[in-house]
Structure formats: structure tokens, C-alpha cells
Image 1 (tube, rainbow, N blue to C red):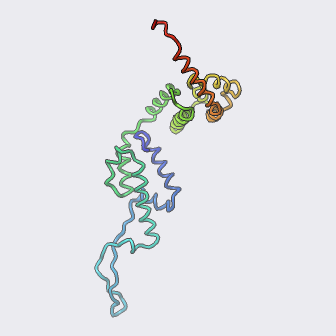
Image 2: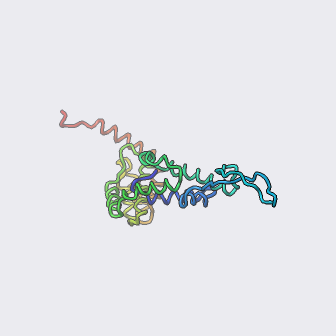
Image 3: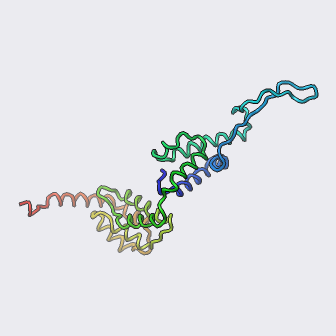
Length: 232
């Protein structure tokens, strides 16, 4: 889905997606040059006295008039228009859904969003803040936690923000919920945080999810039976 702050990344993804499709050259040509122009044709009516055909009135060409190569180009126009429109959020789609030309869609999305993109410095500041406050939330599975963390790190790498493996690994394991405490300690002792990456740490911890869930149930029961002395 297109993010208002990630037009450049969206543009790259769209082009990469199109490159893997049949007739990719025609698809990209539709974006860069505009739709195929059908043009007109004059059909011969009869042969003249000197062998030259008499041509009928000019008419717009129909799909059946096209050569196989031209049909591929025409079909690519339709396909890429659908690709572009389906990749837009609702608020942008409603502004440009009347366009049927892929190049018009592309140019108008660029015009709408180019002025709204964050500067690299703003984006970097935002991501640093997200990294600083990143933690596992209550009822969030380790898989969801890992996916969100991986997305954050990927966003940081996309704008060339560099962090050491130690920083990333420490952030990942030190901000998990309490039920993971003994498993985090074990992973630090057995695997270390310098040589592993957070993907490997996730894979190791994921194996202990059942036991972590049991720990969570015990912690929840303990907290429910703890008497608050101020309530007496």
C-alpha cells in the first residue's frame, strides 16, 4: 500500500513488480510513454484502373484491426492501469480514479505526493524515535513482534541508517514481555548478541513460545491473587 511518505519506495516496488510480468517492456512503456494510440484506418473498397485501390472513408481502428504486437501493447495498457490503481490508498484513489491512462495516473500520483514526502532528516528522526520506543505489547505474539521489528529495521536501511548488530540484537531481546525473561537470559548466555542476528534470535526464541505462554499464565494468576495492602 502506498504511504504518503514513501512514494519513491512505492515507485521502485511497482517497477520491480511490473518487470516480472509478461510483456514487461510494454507495461513499463505504458507508464513512461502513455497508452497505445489506436489510430485510424481506411479500408480498400475496390481496385482502381491502374491497380491502385480505392479507399473508403477514414474510421477509428478497432481491436480486431490490430496486429499481434499491437494487441500486446493495448493489453499491457489495461493491465498496468489496474496494477497502479489497486496499489493506491482510498484517499488517493478517489482523486484519480477517473484516469484510464497509466502515465496520467503515474504523473498525478507523483504530483499529489511529491510535495508531501518527508525530508530524509525528518524521516530519520521519526525512525530513531520509533526505534527508541519500540517494545513488545501485551498480547502481541513473538511472530508479530518480530515482523514489526523487521519492518522498522528495513525502513531504516532504506534510507541508509546504520546501526550495529549489537544495537539491533539488544533492542530486540531487551524489550520483550516479562514471560520471555528466562529465555532472553538463556539466549544471551548461549548464543550471545555479537555473533547472531535478530533473525536467528527470533528463530531460537520462537521454539520456546509454548513455555513462554505458560509463564504468562502463571504471572497473570499471581498478579490476580496479589493483595493490595492499600485496599485493606
